[in-house]
Amino acid sequence: MPLVNQKQWNIGYISGAFDMLHIGHINLIRKAKEHCSRLIVGVMSDDIIKRNKRKTPVIGLQERMEMVAALKYVDEVDITTLDLSNKVNAWKKYKFNAMFSGDDHISNDWLTEKDELTNLGVDLVFFPYTKGISSTILRERKPCVTYTGICFEQPMIIFGPSNPVKNTARGDFMKKVITYGTFDLFHAGHLKLLRRAKELGDYLIVGVTTEHYDVERGKMNVVDSVIKRIDNVRNCGLADEIIVEEHEGQKIHDIQKFGVSIFAVGSDWRGKFDYIKEYCEVVYLERTNDISSSELRAEKQGIVKLGIVGTGRIAKRTMDELRFVSGVNTISVYNPRIKSAEEFAKQFALISATDDFGLFLQAIDAVYIASPHETHYGYTKLALMAGKHVLCEKPLVLKKIEAVELFDMAKHAGLVLMEAIKTAYAPGFLNLLAVAKNGRIGMIRDIEAAFTKLVPEEANTREYNPAIGGSFTELGSYALLPIIKLLGVDYSELRFDRFYSKNSVDAYAKSYLKYNEAIASAKTGIGVKSEGQLLISGSKGYILVKSPWWLIKSFEVCYENPNDNESFSASFPGYGMRFEIADFVRNINNPGMRDYKLSPEDSIAIAGIMEKFLDEGFQEPIRS
Image (cartoon, rainbow, N blue to C red; front, side, top):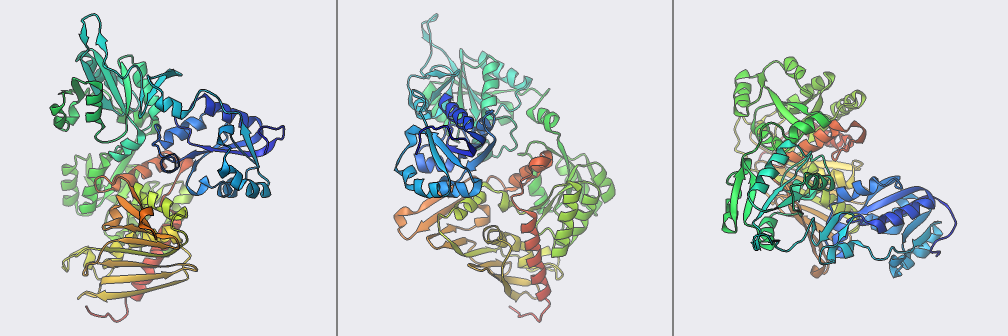
């Protein structure tokens, strides 16, 4: 196992946390590139760092990846998941010839995998460790030590000292002012706000939010990285000290830690921070209305002009969620009943309301469809034919052939078509998929998903529409989602059981899917109430998401020994639609980097199952 030799390799691989990127990291990456034609760098996810190193990274995953990708020595950057932290699994994905590391990482863990990697033709190459610098040193060294112009003190990035500052001219302590913000696309409005905050005291502390915290508090589509936003605040020359805001509740801790006298924030948050008055004076500063980050973001990326089809409950909830997503402006609403459209437009201050679908499409870039199920296919097809991107509520369509046709149209026209099953885009669900797929619970053998809600049986409700109503068309997309995402679309058997309502729609249904090595069931009900949980059973343990699992905020991984159980949590703010809308906007603005968390194949498979269920539903009903 050479420390460094003259052998050259085609593909090299490095994996690490790269938290607070420093000269040691850069030296390692540069030396690795000198010895290989192509260098792939894996950046550990936040969860892996917490699990393996028992510490929280100072810099979030996306920012760490951006910093590594910016190095000229790096050809490809990827996320090191739990599965890929196994070096053999990493080789299976990347097929590298050499794996590089610093010589401080030579350990039994490496030696245990040496023989297996050697048999695969992989050399383990260790470069001399850069002495005197590491992320740990930067975290723990006190007093703050400046490194490349930035001071670090666990757990925050700081410019300047962390102790109260004495005004030697006056012989007393300065009056400290603190303010917080994202400061995305730094502009004149930010500058004016900081200047007025600075005028309130002698010493200004500015808190800049991390991307992770922005997502947690529901702020989507932030353009600038946290490092760039920190640099912009520093370069304005008004901040005496800059800290990073990582979580809810940090403000009171910071106020007490830094001896703050005044908390200042924009007037659009008026009343929100009155609880802080117990700790210091709170001042709400009037916002400037001459410029905003949203306007600059629109100039930089192109704002998406969105139209809404439908004016019902889901459309209204989505309008509430749209305020949390940057880069999109809802301007119009369509409903064949013009009065409903006009009332909706008035309620949400939209520019226009119409009952003319052709006219409606002319003014927009993209459409969100929240109309009755049976109208989805027609509206989606017309929108795609007009060159508009489409986000359509579930179920997208009720026939497989229609789903195939629509996705084919979108692909050939270069348009975005997404099915709005909000759970598919939620951080907690994406985390669950990663945990379930990484081998934590072993081989997945069974999935049980349930979603029921009691709906009064009335003739004019969509849930009891004899043509396309029932529990399965209403709720089945959610119940099928974890099954399709974890077990795939290639099931070998599919069957249904159901009980009917008085007008012959299913009041309660169970779907059974059989795979080569797994089974699954999806349970839905509008006339029967059941526990709405998700249970994923594996050969080593199981994952339990308690009701309502489709609004996933937390889940538990359970093992034979309960002492080994693990809990995971993530935010699910509001109604949850902001995540799917943010993905929709990102995919529109980045045609070369589209990422579909719910793929066309997933939606096509769900449509096929819906079609089979409805076809079989014409049999003689069993009355409940």
